[in-house]
Image 1 (spheres, rainbow, N blue to C red):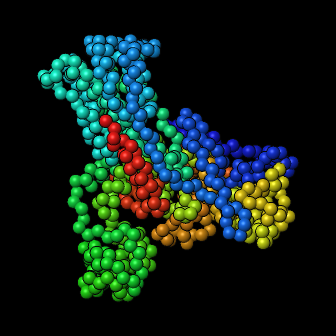
Image 2: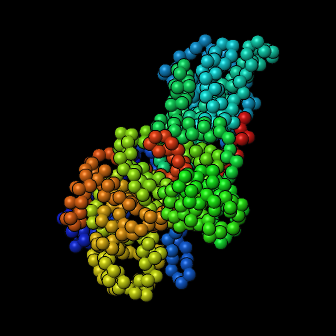
Image 3: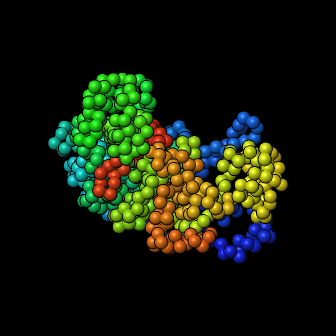
Length: 626
């Protein structure tokens, strides 16, 4: 698998020293700091795939004067409109209008195909623009049927129609690929009418097969058009090549099924979807957004208590069974119920705080069947944005689960709690490659934090950074006192770089793990260890904090925790990762564990809802299609 992007270049210490001493003319200070000390190089991916569209948020005025750097936004998704396929080219030139495909071999039906083209004159077939173009290009160079042989649809067509009709099992919508199969030759209407029906069937099935292959490989929506937090390279698809392959193979089912992601996670989600669709709905459904503190009232409480009573074990039942039975119908969160909630929270691996919130409901009640189905369908769609082979070894960060894992040879060798970005500083969804580990790192302060959080204070107290363990450099890379800068003269674009020196108070803790990307996101340690004890851990500025950073560093470096500990004894240093290790900064509210059991998580950023809106927009465009 090929991963994208320019990778960070490690500069020799002498070069860095010269740059800082003599300056870098015309250099941007923040860009220089990000390359030398910061959280990744801001760059657009390069390689086989074109880069996703860039999103540059506009500065916004805020109270008190000045400007503010905004986070990426969410967009109103608009699906591309379908176009009517223009068959005029085929009708005007029955012989190939372009150099005929060198591999094209006319069949016994090729003459019938040329005769049948006249039946496309008033045919209204709508398709995506690239599919419409591919149809004309392919059949101009290969004027023959793929799906019709002799007097009717052939075996290829029958296999293709069956596969398209089974789209539900992949979380897709069969209506998107619906094709009306013409009657057999024995039907009435005459030879001309049958031929006209066959050529229309040919074009419709090819159009819908191409749509299916595209959806299976890349998904139904373009994720980069949903939000600036999504960053995925396009997956090129040679549509003419797809039709050529289908014209020459009898293994249509095998080919079409191979267009889907070929990884164990995708298969586990498909099995889960099939199981859910065959199962009965739980008769007790609790509002997943319930928030209830002691003394408050909610009609959802009796349902929650009924679910708890149903799953009581001997320990909790023995201690609280009588209380639970006596207050089973109470809509008031009585203080007597608090110890019960705390006990079941702790049993579920949560912090026993007695507050009933969405995570407590999800842990104690589970997710409704309808919600589970939607989460699985969303997860299947999102997996189609990723490489078919996820790779080994790999690091997988699942934001809604607040976990980061190191996986190698099908085994999860490390799983640690993680802290992700706050809802106002969300962590992006993308993939890249792990490149290096920095021990006792510097922290290059991002412009967004410098402008949004530090600048108001610096206007009042210019020497704050000098006293707090930070260094300031100008655009030439020269260190200057923070107190010498007129911070009040700048808004969203500050021509200075700021970094925090290695220390116990450093925001990155004792190490960081880099996979340079334009979002400046990486994994790192943190001095705020208490955050890992919380159940809801969307608490950072966007980077991923690890509870076990030494374990992850040892894993990606292919060494031991003792080795990492020894490196940390010797101050600031950097070590390159010599293997190819994919890293997925992912967002799945339904995800299988290594045994294949699917777990469900809260939609902390409400992204499932926005993806569903994009899917609905796509369905609305496709539904009128013939």
